[in-house]
Image (cartoon, rainbow, N blue to C red; front, side, top):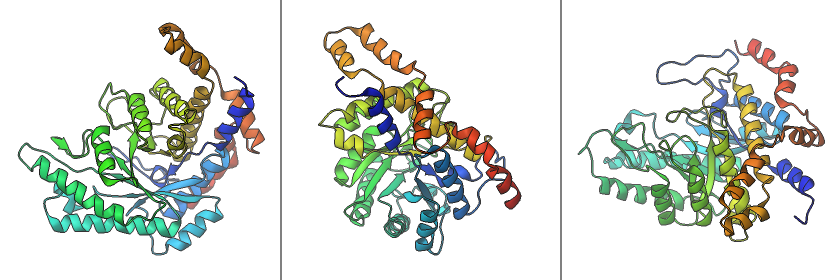
Length: 385
C-alpha cells in the first residue's frame, strides 16, 4: 500500500470509540440467581465513576449508555455535568419495555391501546432525557411476542409496531437516531415481533432515515452468519450500531471475544472493508459500538476492561488485512489465498502495537494490570459495603 501502514493503523486505533453500559457495572444475574458483588455500583453516579475508570485505563471509552428506569434520576442536567467532570458523556439511552406487569402481553405491540400509549410515553421520556444529556441515540430492544399459537394476530401486531414507532420517530430531533434491536426468541417463546435482522431492517425502512438496525451479537440463532448480516446492512446504509457480547448457547451475555474471537474478527473485517469503500464509508463511520454484557461472576470493571481489549485486538487485526491482495485473490478465484490473507491478519499478535499506542496516548500499556494496581477496587469495596 502507498501509505505508512503502521502509522495509519495506530491513528485509527487511537480514534476507536467503544461505549460501555451502566448496567454492566451493577449487580446482575441469570434467571436463577444474582451473585452480588460488594463493589458493584448501585446508583447512577457510581456506575459513571466505574465507567470513567475503564476510560482512564483504555483511553477509548468516553461515553456510557444508560437504561431507564434503572438509571432514572430527578435532575438530568446534574448527571450530564457529573459525567463531564469524570471525562465522560452520556451515550445511548435505552428504554425498558420488559419489566412491568402491563407488558405481559407486550409493550409496543400490546392489543391494549392504553398499554401502547404508556409504552410510547416511556420512550418519549427517554427521548427527552437524551435531548437533555446531549445523547443522539435511542437504543430500543423490542421484546414483544407471544407464548402460544392463537394468542394474538401476527399481522395486527405488525401494524401496531409500525404505528407506534412512527410516533416515536416524529419525536426525535434532527440529529437523533432510533436503533432497532432484534432477537430471535425470548422473553416470549412462541414468536417474537422483531425476530431477526430482516424484520428490523424492514421496520427501519418503514420508519425512514432516523431509524437504523442494531446488531446484538448474542441475539442470533446458532449458525447465523453475523458478518454477512453486517455486510448487508452496511451496503443498505442501515447499520446503526452494535451490542458487543459473546455466547455459547443462546443470549449468554459473555465477555465479547471470549468464545468466538474469529467471528468478532470477521465482523470487523466487514466494517473495515466498508470504511475503505466510498459507497459505504459514511455509514461505517457512524456505527455506534456499544458493549452489552452481564458480568455475573467476573469483577465488573475488570471484565469491562477485558472486553474493550478484545475489541481493540479484533479491530487491529482487521486493519492489518492486505485489502489489495485480498481483492485480487477474490477477483481471480484464488480461494485459499483469500482465506489465508484473513488468517494471516487474525493470527498476528497485535498486543505489542496496542501497548505502544496506549503509551503514546499517555496511559499504561497494560490496562488491566494498571487498574489492579490503582487501588480503586479496594476503595469501592469499603465505600459500598
